[in-house]
Image: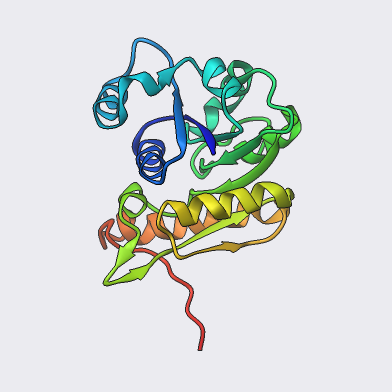
Length: 204
């Protein structure tokens, strides 16, 4: 796939590295001059992958957005025409909503012509870099109204090394998925259990 990553901090950077390893064509949409995190990522995946947001989007079929949610309207303005492209919202509007929307997902659905899915928001970047615990692959989770976007998110989750990508449901469940992310944040950070923990669905 041709993938654009907007927001190349911990989460975006981790997924970019995993998808490069999986053989995808990955571009980083960034503002210049590059931030310190972008410079560090460029050393890992190559400076040639960095370009402007508009250029990266125009050359990609899939756009991962891993910015602070409050920046989503600015991101949308920089992306240009994304009609028919798959937009993957990896943000969490837990502490600050992208007014006047509840989540970045809802802003993307309302303001773009893209196929939108919420995914890659429910765990820490360490688990994206290494989604295997004692030989068992972790699970990823998604939600949204676009079935085609969900299929792509599922494929990208598997390519990143996750075992299963569970469907939380339609767009009405996006806020629930963000609360699910808060559950991980609560355990890992607020309760001091450490970031090396994750969720996996098991069946009897």
